[in-house]
Length: 140
Image 1 (cartoon, rainbow, N blue to C red):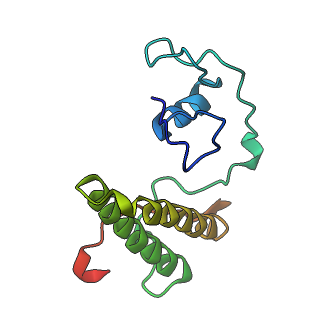
Image 2 (cartoon, rainbow, N blue to C red):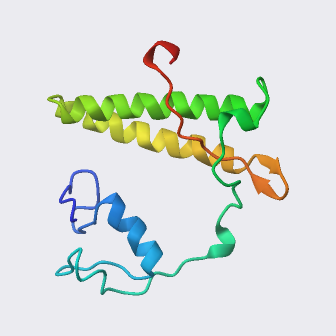
């Protein structure tokens, strides 16, 4: 559960992998050294501002928005970038680890694209959001 990658994070701080970071939010407590997946997190309480969470529509799909709309265009762009990222990670894990830095950079780019979507009103007091739909390589 500890990612052990000090080159991409702070050199004096251990971090848990993505899954466990999300679990910390769900369980309201941080993992600390000595914790295991079975023990769960026993560290400090996670302070979470639920009012700061975007009211994103549930399970958005490309087909929720008309072709040519700003939201659909942003979702399509996100999906292409997401699929490119997955392809890059596949190359990293299948013999080209030197591409990891590019994949991490792509993750930050994807975050920015998601944030753009989360600022787009989608009606009913909700915002748009990424759809994480697969785009075939020929369409990217």
